[in-house]
Length: 277
Image (cartoon, rainbow, N blue to C red; front, side, top):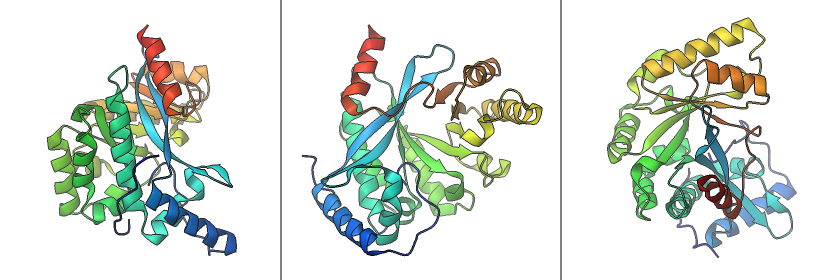
């Protein structure tokens, strides 16, 4: 059984709902179970491969939390992350994800990268740098770790946030702007942040390659990202035509069901071993 999650104060792992519904009886029970799961470390991680568009080989993975519930089965993050945000558990959960992903990635047969979503609360609570250092204590090389941050977290980033992110970059850890294109970040925001990766939101990819406007915007974003020395990752690729277009315009990597769904740890390790031959 994984080690219990250390208690911490209020806080994203994976995709969290934007609104908090009024809790009913079932949700209150789920919240009680979630507190127990946090205390006992009753979570697992799955890994969705990130592939090079040029070679289609696995170059990394995103860690995605899952909760094996004794009655509800495997609970996806969308069913409980909003509870963790609301009741103050997202920061210890986020720390657990960083530590566990770091330890598991350090033992992979091929040294590919690992990306982990972090919440705004981890930044606000001032614990993110410490949590990153704990993740690296497993022996994971800093350049293999990447933190994913949403546009909404960064658009109004203050000096303390910028200092924390700069300190994390000084360790050698990468910083990815997740879901770019959802309407929050400006070019000025991109310029002042110590980013290494830009992940293009699936909404930018859906109309490719047939809609001229979508194609022009995506091509411009790829060129802009490269001008800023960023690695470009496309999410939500659904067709081979989209893959071919993105490869043609120089997008570096992709993460979508077209290449692989999230995999349990043992299946992801097997994928890496098979590719290594």
